[in-house]
Image 1 (cartoon, protein in one colour):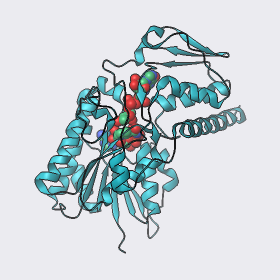
Image 2 (spheres, protein in one colour; image 1 turned 180 degrees about the horizontal axis):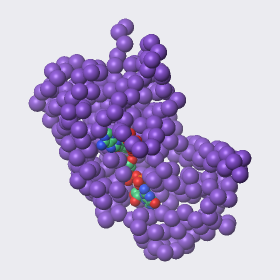
Image 3 (tube, helix red, strand yellow; image 1 turned 90 degrees about the horizontal axis):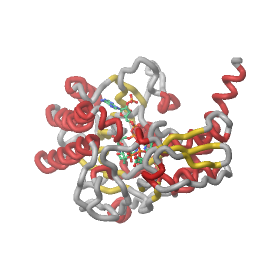
Image 4 (cartoon, protein in one colour; image 1 turned 30 degrees about the horizontal axis):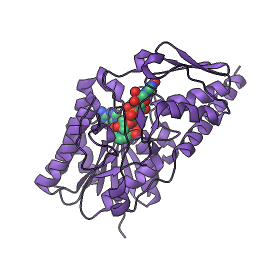
Length: 356
Ligand code: NDP
Ligand code: GDR
């Protein structure tokens, strides 16, 4: 069988790292797009690094940016990918309220630029395209659980930008016959989740409290509910979507929903602490909940101008058509993240102690 070539944008992010590993394991040549940064930003894929001077190198990184069309055209021309996974995005919902124009440029127009690159280069029949769509599209949920046919109602500049990306992907499929699909993925986390997303923020803080390195955790809305899965399962789903003969859009989710509050409780349970809340939701602003000597406090800064209250996905289509299902449940996910953060922070502390 001839070797397939994949191009992954956002390879330095959580999903990019898991996907690159998956595709390398399947024998692909993998090209990743990384942004120029003043400090190293390849930590998540460093273990996959191969010396480009060696022969038979299957993992290569290229500088690029979704806001730079000429760069994207050149990269796609050079790599001639069989599959493009467009994972790059300004992916933080709260940050998108602060940087709405940049978010639209990278997340919405960035997707258009890649689709146009495929067309301009005449790769319409060669290159398959995967778009990282999101459950944030459902926003103010019009139906629960949310499935492929549920109407969208975006609630942030991020979601509005991703709405454009979703529809332009559908449009290029219908207008030009591109093999282009959306994966509408519900929240997925892992030990390498970005530290400012709520799950990792919580597991890092819980680990730090367990080691006596931190005594307070500030959070926003504890009552938001999310359908949380493990990133490892979701990149497998992305790959399966792209392997289908007919391009279509799929929801990937666990079919279970939990509140941020439940996540906090589960994470503290991992270190044998019980948390007692002082009130509920918004009433708690300015208050702290005690767990032994440590505190969880509510900071209004972390509330969003418009919130997505409830996400719960129905992954039936993916189960029936792709044979996909999640393998890691909520408790195992939280446990893995807390244990990993405990190990990471203990290593950092020991290194600091050794260096005096
Ligand atoms: P991350 O934030 O971890 O990674 C985002 C990646 O995009 C990083 O590699 C980042 O580079 C890169 N990036 C950001 N802006 C640009 C740009 N202008 N040009 C090129 N690269 C850029 O996100 P995840 O891995 O969690 O998510 C992957 C994709 O899936 C995103 O599009 C996200 O919106 C979407 N998604 C994620 C879900 C989740 O729960 N994780 C659920 C549904 C959708 P750098 O490392 O330099 O910052
Ligand atoms: P989300 O993830 O917005 O769902 O987007 P995030 O973890 O940022 O927020 C989840 C929920 O937790 C509430 N929350 C807090 N969030 C953060 N970040 N920090 C806090 O201190 C805090 N306190 C409470 C939020 O209000 C929210 O309701 C993620 C991203 O990966 C997107 O790119 C992706 O598209 C969606 O998941 C699906």
